[in-house]
Structures are given as C-alpha cells and as structure tokens.
Image 1 (spheres, rainbow, N blue to C red):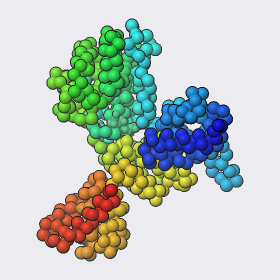
Image 2: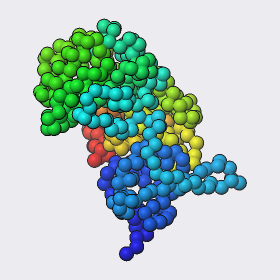
Image 3: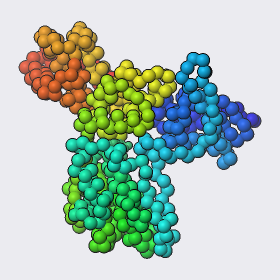
Length: 472
Ligand code: ADP
Ligand code: MG
C-alpha cells in the first residue's frame, strides 16, 4: 500500500510525542503540516525560518529517526518554510530547505559533538587533538555580575596563563543552569585562541567514565592514559558524577597528578561545593583544594536584565524594556530557564505573527511556569484570593491601606511564598513593586494570625485547598 504524506506524518507525530515533553510537542510539532511525499522524501511545512532553525538545532536526530522509521534508511526530510515578507501586498511565500545538521546557533543546549576515539591513537597529530569545545561559549557573552565575579575573573586569569597561576586546579561550582559549562568552555576557547599547539580538552566526567570503562573492556587502558597525559589544559565538567565510581576516580587521580606535576592546567566544575561531594575519595578532594574554588550564584535582577538584552542583541531580536524587566523579575530560578522562556516567547510571537509585548510575555510565562513547575502561579493566587475576599486584583496590587485589603494582600503574599518558587523580591514586584521586607512582614503577620484566630485559620485552610486542587 502506498502511504500518503498525511499518514506518514501522523505516525511520525505519534513517535515524536512519545519522545518529547508535551509543551515542546505543542510548540514545535503540532503546527507542522505535511505537504508531500515523493518516494523517500517527506516535505513538511513550517511557519517560519526561526522555526526551521530551531527544529534543526534541537530535534534533527529525532526527526531523522522517525522519518527513517517510516520511509526506510533512504528516508529524507525537506522543509517548506513560510517566509513572512512583512507586508500585505507581498503574501508569505515558501522556500524549500533540506534537512541538515546545522549546529551554529547561539542557544546553548545542543548535543555534544562526538569525541574521537582516543583508544586507537599512538601519538597525537594535530587533527586528533579535538577539543570538544563549543565556539558559542566565550567570555564576551558571559555576563559579569556579583554572582560570578570571582569565578569569571579567575577563569580569565587561568585562560591567559594556563598552568602558571596558583589557580590550579580551578574548581567552579554552582547549581544547575547557572553557567558552569559556559564558563569552563569559555576558558578552553580562550586558551586555544592563544596557541595552536595547546592541546585543550573538554570532557564531561560522564564521558570520561564511559571511555574509561570501554578501555577496560577493550584492554586499551594504555592508550587511554596515553591520550589524557598529552593534554595541556584539561577541562572536566560535572565531577559530581565521579561519586561512588572508585576505579574511575583512581584513574582520574593518576592523570590529575601527572598533569599537575608537569605544569598543565586542570579545570573542573561541580554542581556542589567540594565539601559536599559525597562518595569522592579524600585524596582526590584534597587535590581540589590545591588551587582555587569559586562558586556561581543565581544572577541578581540587573544581571538577569543584562543577560536577556545580550541574548536578544546577538539574535537580532527586539524586546521592549518593560518585557525585559518583567522576565528578569519573574524568572529567578536559573539562567537556563530564563533562556527557555525567551525561546518560547520568540516562538509564540513567530507563530502568532505578533510583536513581543508584555501581554504575550505573561501568557507565555504562565504556560511555562505551569509546565516546568506544575504549580500555581502568582496570577492564580491573586485571582483566587481576590475572589475569596471579594476584592479586585488591582486593589491587591494597589497602595491602599484599608484593613480588609491589607489582610487580603498579606494572605496572597503568604500563599505566593508557600506555593511558588518566586523569591521575596519577585513576590514584592508582583504586588505593585513592593519591597521584599514588606513580603517578610506579610508572611509573619499571616502566620501570627493563624495562631490566634481560628476563623482566619479556617479561611486559610480553604484557600490552601484551592491551591492544592490546582496542583493536582
Ligand atoms: P550549567 O553548566 O551550570 O548547568 P550552563 O553553562 O549550561 O549551566 O548555562 C545555561 C545557559 O545559561 C547557557 O546557555 C549559558 O550560555 C547561559 N548563561 C549562564 N550564565 C550566563 C551569564 N553569566 N551570561 C550569559 N549567559 C549565561
Ligand atoms: Mg553544565
């Protein structure tokens, strides 16, 4: 039976659906239309150039896999991109683009390139000195703030004189999405820039572990060590993965000592402070203390604004100031999430062919916050509390000091603290730009009232029930 493009794409979609998050599926795959099928080539229509680039950047392997499942190993994909010429007279037109693996986009989260197999090498020629560095991570686009000043400047110092400063090893630690990989890669790129003969190698500790276990299996430990001992600047990302892997740690210890003794630079990152790295041998931990340990914190509001503006600028996209401010206030979990929100916002604007404005930003954030945290948001709390006390949301945000409004406002702030991940500062912002100390005071007052006033306590229980219902 000859398949039609519709049925092929339908099967592709059901495969894709099983592989990606629901929000991503809705944003990136539902809007696609199958256009044609020509023996082994499926043509799909996507709404914009940005959309096409995003798919190629993030989902190229998945798309290839599902098309080949459907059409065999010769199966190919072609995009028909709607190009919006921006005026009524010139209707959107289509361009056809092949499916390729375009890796040069500025949005983090790409797949790591395959590393060459170190086990086959005797001595390393220039080509084999593959660094595994991502050229999009450099210092200029790593925004400086109080959150990263020490780590960033130590990184620059190390990059200028690898192996020579006292920052050896350099250990960077911080929570997920706070810029560890970006920073260590920036160091690698800068070192590389300075000398052709510098062998810089970036490797995740997971990959190091896999290579090492493969080497044991293939009886090629010698080549494995040989490879690593020739590195001039070794960057190991996420060393927390070494926890509990005794044999790998032993091997790393050996390589570490050798490189260090020979004046080579070692840079490491970890998602927690060395003292909290459970399951790591003491002798390895004590080595980490030889150099410098610097932490990364969540960027403050101003730094977040600067990060957003820098991203927008490098993508040639304009976002009004009030939207930048709103995003910087609202997303205070980590930088990766902040970037995720930006991507969605641009995607929504592209799909709906609208400008990016505050309304759209709020809408987008609402979906995402719901998606990533599956929790109640500030808007929901304000609305629910407003209805409960029969007060408008505007009044909650307003300056009025009428007693019943003050109490309702404090209750809403209290619930925001309890049920969302917003910081005190951010909660204050959502209530008419109040100070974080006002929020602290509100939380305290509500707890006190719950202790002494049973009627109030019942009301709070009822409200909390509404929050929980939303959570399910
Ligand atoms: P981690 O490795 O700590 O989980 P990443 O280095 O992958 O975090 O950072 C997540 C994203 O945030 C990346 O796209 C990175 O470019 C971006 N990012 C983090 N910190 C900054 C910063 N100070 N300036 C600009 N972009 C940043
Ligand atoms: Mg990382």
